[in-house]
Image (cartoon, rainbow, N blue to C red; front, side, top):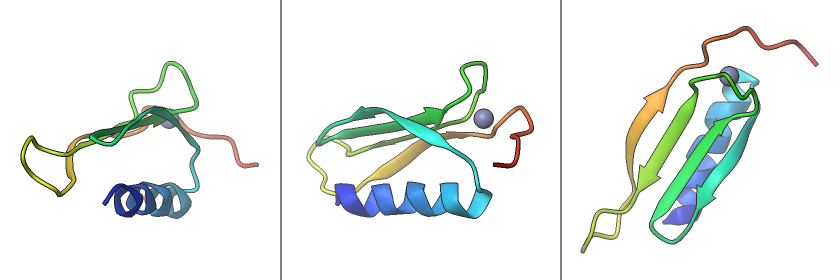
Length: 69
Ligand SMILES: [Zn+2]
């Protein structure tokens, strides 16, 4: 379950060619943010209590242009 969500997040990052870092990663919560501190980018996934699937509960877009590397 968790790896499936991570794959989704990774594929987003690759598609957008943008970097993120894992802020929180546990059995029930997975949060990634942008490497740029001031950026609002955030993807938050969690497993609802008594459930076994991941919900992506928040997605914020980057608020800046990333340099090409
Ligand atoms: Zn960003």
